[in-house]
Image (cartoon, rainbow, N blue to C red; front, top):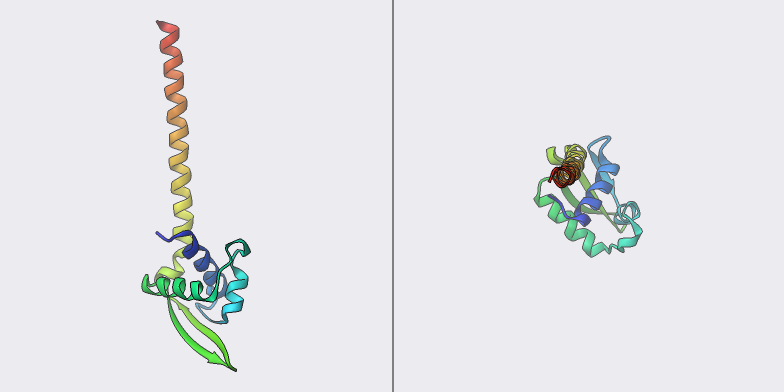
Length: 118
């Protein structure tokens, strides 16, 4: 399971690379895709990208083009399946929350019925 920051970076990478499965991305372009309230730096971005590479979401190569740092990112199987897994996690959380609310309502109703009987 990814942390909040890793998930945000993976969302940005997936948005930029999901069509072809590979992309040539500059750090500024990737930082522009991230939420501004988090104030990501290039160093933090580099650490998160290397962590996601180790988790086999994508393959990352750093290069320079006209003096500017560029990332060559090619998605792997985990990267392609990221959106599906993310949707499943949200669905699981919603299901657990629904069961908790349903259980609380049933417990309340049983308590009210027992008070009414006795």
